[in-house]
Image 1: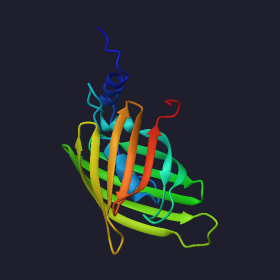
Image 2 (image 1 turned 45 degrees about the vertical axis):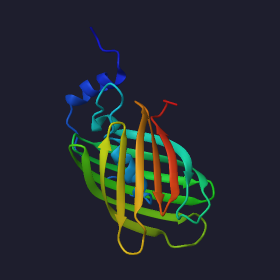
Image 3 (image 1 turned 45 degrees about the horizontal axis):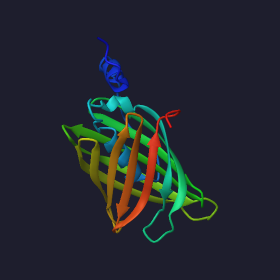
Image 4 (image 1 turned 180 degrees about the vertical axis):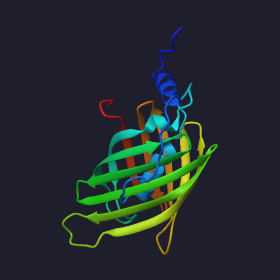
Length: 195
């Protein structure tokens, strides 16, 4: 009897492939990229999702801001993920309606349900003439069921960020990034054509 689950079919196909991963692209959303990486290791109800199932392009929309005191603005994001069974890298870009542009690069490694890695975020308000802000940091977290929670530690005076990623279906996930008790980013991602 054939299992009709798309997740099971994808997992079976991915088990026969070998994919190598290196750098995620560049981007201003280091916490966002970190969130996406953690999300990729989530497990949907009834079947374990392999990290490699998250390879490819994802699109999202929601709200974003660069600092806790800034006004949240509608944003659209896209991310490209490259993963194998224990490593993942991503390159994410988000463009806010009020001009906020972020690019995030992420690279992580998994050991069981724990993961560690590094991230870089570059952000600027388009048309402002301001110099882009670069933030680099380390990532550490844990996956529990359909949810991944982790911290991003930045150097210098930049506050640390907390990220929650939750798999909402086999073709979508939600990401929330917060710092100092305020939500910076809240974006729902989906596969192209899976809305």
